[in-house]
Image (cartoon, rainbow, N blue to C red; front, top):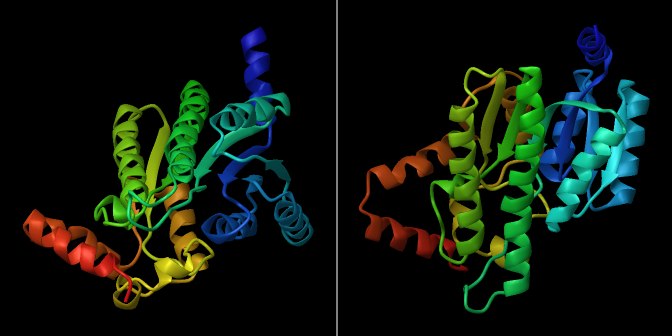
Length: 270
């Protein structure tokens, strides 16, 4: 009888989609597009001011339930703390979007070690923590969807983006293997792999690179639209844009040494 009561409670709980990195870029646009579809949201980012503003707009316009949780996920303990707060508030997370991420550009021996270690913690460690904790709950309920945001650089690791490229390669490999492990559990894990996006992610140095001329950036709402479709109904991985799909498949056609020379030239500043 106790188990039945617990199941009844779960069925009556509001369902939420949790989005990290929700204050800008893809995460911000996904929050809007999901709210348009009537989805309740948990928004996570470092900027409380931006989150509160977005929260007010989504509640006012779309009449959905929205929670804001201010967390710096470059500190791994904050990812664990985030999960704990979700449990304390008795929120049912049926969808998880691991979107938060940063990148650095420059020669590896000259870039900041401190920044790169924080990037690894944000792009990899906290992502693994949230997958582990929320996926475990989802498997218990036999339903749930997780989308991890990788990059076209997962297929094309670029010089001068050495650590960032490596983190996104990890995200893709981790997502594909986890998806295989959870097949048949009712939990679907997917990877979104965008190319250049017109957001604040890119520094002045990044924008001067040759590749920004050959592969134009797209608006975040375009990528978000593909992300929403993948999260709600898709499977596997999604490379956004025909040019990015073409570039991601080039390594299959060219020798490694030649491919690396091309990428190095593209990554250099014009």
